[in-house]
Image 1 (cartoon, rainbow, N blue to C red):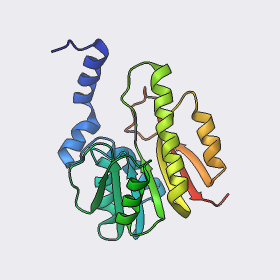
Image 2 (image 1 turned 60 degrees about the horizontal axis):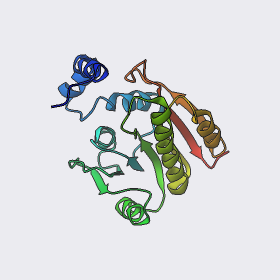
Image 3 (image 1 turned 180 degrees about the horizontal axis):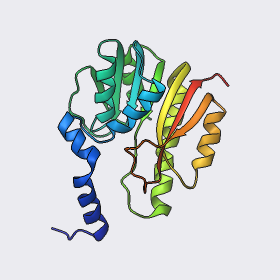
Length: 208
């Protein structure tokens, strides 16, 4: 077995002692990321009865799991990822790359409509620990989510997407402001403070 680096060993130790990891395990959530969405939901009420929601890069399914508990039968949730994901009651799952037309068609078919009210994306690349590599990869995923949202959101719809502060960050913010009526950033308490992770919340699509 290859020897762990100091950084990976430090991350594992931090993860094991993390209060949100422990809470997720206690409460039956699939990941600690659910608490980021929970905090934003408490302030913004993104998840509302009757909406249609798409969760991009959903695996292992924490955000979809939370959305399903909020919406119950009063709404539709479709999750998609290139990785398989265990079934979640109340969530339709499409395996594949959402950039492909056939996958997009499957997502819309599961939703029962060509337009949606909310797009969620907590996607992040596998980090190499090298900013010059990680940042472009992360921003590329954010750009894909923004492009997808512009294609499928109904007028007035919302987008919540993970960004990383650094090169390309300001450009994505400017792009979103040209298409959404309200654009803000959020740093939930469950986001580790040393992480450049931040969330872009873009609301009121097309109402600029």
